[in-house]
Structure formats: structure tokens, C-alpha cells
Image 1 (cartoon, one colour):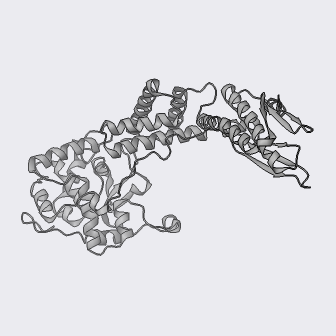
Image 2 (cartoon, helix red, strand yellow; image 1 turned 135 degrees about the vertical axis):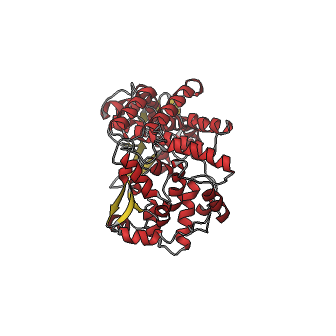
Image 3 (cartoon, helix red, strand yellow; image 1 turned 90 degrees about the horizontal axis):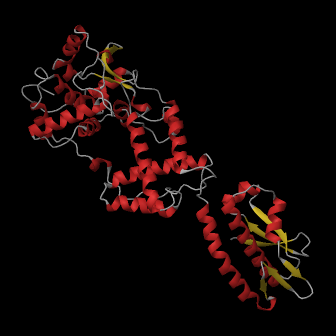
Length: 439
């Protein structure tokens, strides 16, 4: 329990300042209490301040158990009740504990030993919920707000609700859901269960977001999951996911025959646009259009069956000439004539969008043809080849739907590149000759 000595303006008396525990500040309407110690003698003032801090700690502990509203006079009465100063004898008592002013250092040490555990209890109580709020009730309020504001995709909502439910169940047998010890134990158990480190950190991050929301909304005082993510050495971005080697590209292109199976257009588009698998799998036929005389993919979130990762993901990507040579626009024309809405009708939508079915198909294709890198490596390959061809970093970022620029002014005020500039950049993608077709 923190307490301090302050000398009066005229130096004739010393005052004690007692810091109020954070959970009680709203109840008391202030951060600290101030009381005259009736002496200008520093040694005696230190002893009296320690005794007063002990009495305050006893009262604060009782108040945190009850959380009853009151006013400052009531609290000061509770704190000073049974505290007596005898100026003639020089004695000071608090809560029937007599202290001897002749042994100042020993008495202060003894009082501080009494106060210390109360300070730890006050710190632990800082995460307690407001009266009447159970974890289940806080979760319900959290989910209700996020659902109303459409902050989550269906997948995210299911994952977050499942995680919060598991944590609630865990706490039933492992301790208070609002205690830091329980949060640490929950994380430790996840690691002992051999969950992938990224999964553990994802869980901790989501729980931290929930508890931070609860803190900001006044349900609790502390975010018990803050700072609990597991740190690991950060790998270079270029090493995090391998790109397709020239051999891999040749093997991939040699395995594709869009005329026999229209799903084969998917990895071709991935290689020549660098787009994410879900961005491609959810494309509508109408999203292949002409802008400024150039054929483009309009990657957007213009209908309920589409979802994008972030605001930067919405963009125009020119159709590479190699895709046109291979017959993509003819394929699109045929789909339009049939009245087909989607470019890949064989990839149905799921909880994770159309990319889920597309990813399963490509995994089977990779296994069948013994291809090593995954679909996302096509994105990495496209980015790498563009950089090697001398395309500016901001243009690469724009083509791939990444944010770019260290300064806020660049991100806010920079205008999108013209479609012509994007086409010039994308046409620098060139791969080796495969099956008689230069790519």
C-alpha cells in the first residue's frame, strides 16, 4: 500500500498521502487520501504514516469485498476509527495495534509486513468484474456488440465464441476467470497440448482483445491476457514461405489443362496475378471487365458471397497477356453465354468463403502431380519475380493488395496507379518456355 509524506506549506506539520487501490477509485471519487499526522518530526511522522496506511489497507480490503457505494467522509471515518494520537505520551494506535515511537524503524518494518499482503490482494482484485457481471454475461455483451456492428466474418465469430466458451469451461475447474494466474495456466496448458505456436498466440491475442474490450467497458480493471503472447525469433519474410523455383513453375504449368478442367485456371490466375486463393475463387464473371481499354480483374467485395482480407485488398489487376493467349477471355465469354454468374462455379461457398473448396481441390492436385509449394507460394513467386524485374515496391504492393509506405501521408494521400501503369508492371512477369508456350 503506497503512502507518502508531504510537509505543509508553512513547514509546521507533516501530512500522509495514502494511494487508493485502483478498483476503489471510482467508488471513492479520488486517487488518494491526505491526512495530517500532527507532528513536524520526520521520524515520528514516518511511524504514524505507516500506522495510518495499515488502517487504510484494512478498510480498503473490506471495501473491495463489499464494493458498497459511499462518500469520502464515511471512508475517512472507517479509516480513522480506533486511530488515536496522544500528543503528550507521543503514542499512536491503530486498530488496537499499539506502536512504540521509541523504536521507529522496527515498528515501521512490522507495519509494512502487515500491509504488504493487503497490497497484493488489492492488485489481484483489480481484475474483478463489476458486481453482478459473470464471465458468461460479459461474453454475451461482447458477442452482441460485435455481431451488431458486423465486425466479424462467420468464421471469426464461430472461432471466437468457441474459444471464449472453452475458456469459461476451463475456469470452472482451474480458478477465477479474472485472475492473471488462470490466464497463464490456460496458455501453459495450450502449449503442453502441443498446439502450434501460432495457434496459441492467436488464442491469446483473441482473449486479450476480449478482456481489453471488457476493461474499456468497465466490466474489469485489468486485461489479464495482455503481454502473454509467446515470442519467437522472427524469420525473414522471404524465408517464411518458399517461392516456386523455375522447376516448380514448369511442373505446375505442365500439370494444367484448363480446356479439360476449368478449375485449372485457378493456379494460372494465382501465378499471373499474385492474388489470394479466396479472392480468385469468389470472382464473378462480371468481375472480368474492361477499364481504360484494358482487360482487368476487379477484386471487390460487392456482394454477400465475397469477403476480402482488408481495405487494400480491393483493387484492379490487369489480365496478363499470357492468360489471354491461353484462352481465358474466351472461357469468360462462354460462361457469360451460359448465364453463369461465377468464374469458378465448381468451388461452392463455405464458412471460409469459396477459397476453402478451392484450397482442398488444389491440395489434391498438388498431391496427384507431386508439387511441393502451396497455393500461397504462387503469390510469393509473383511478388519476387516482379521485384527482380525492377518493378517499384509501391506498384508491387498495389498489384498484390498490400498497404505500402512508412508514412501516414503516403498511405492517405497517394493515388492509385493507372491501369496502364499496372499492366506495364505485370507484363514484366515472364517464365520459361513450357509445353511450347512462352510464359
